[in-house]
Figure 1 (cartoon, one colour):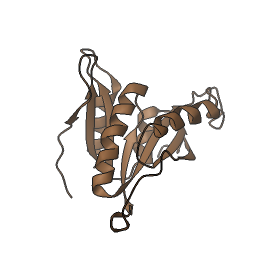
Figure 2 (cartoon, helix red, strand yellow):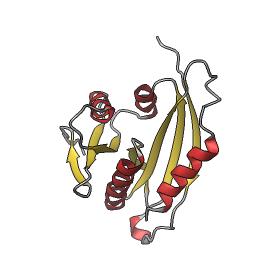
Figure 3 (cartoon, rainbow, N blue to C red):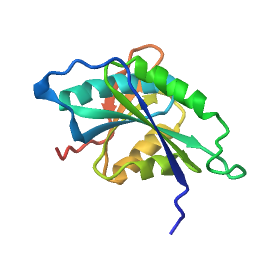
Figure 4 (cartoon, rainbow, N blue to C red):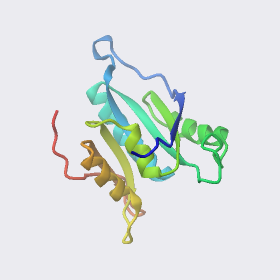
Length: 172
């Protein structure tokens, strides 16, 4: 069994207070997760996920995996935590929904995200449409194999974000 090389740092980031009616309170057990991929793709994913979370009365959680290479201790990432918190706060401030940001420190990006999610999680990821391979579709396949529901939000230079999916078989 591999050691658990993951450390979680939780930062609650609150954007504008959402307008909710008493009849549509958030379900504390239902969460929509957004995995940070890159800045523009994550913005598109957060926008799509905020609509989804609002419709499902779910909480919106932004996951950020910060990779710490082996020469450094796991508790000492190369990028300052204040910088990461600033980027995540700016992303959350642009959303209408209440966003909880979770920063995980780990040795491997994909493994860190996989450990952060339990089976059956609803995950939204932003993905740039490129002709060369990137890691986002690979991570989406891994999360799907783990039993998660994965939605890819594709963006390109010529068009606004469009929502796609990776073989979603809904169990809801």
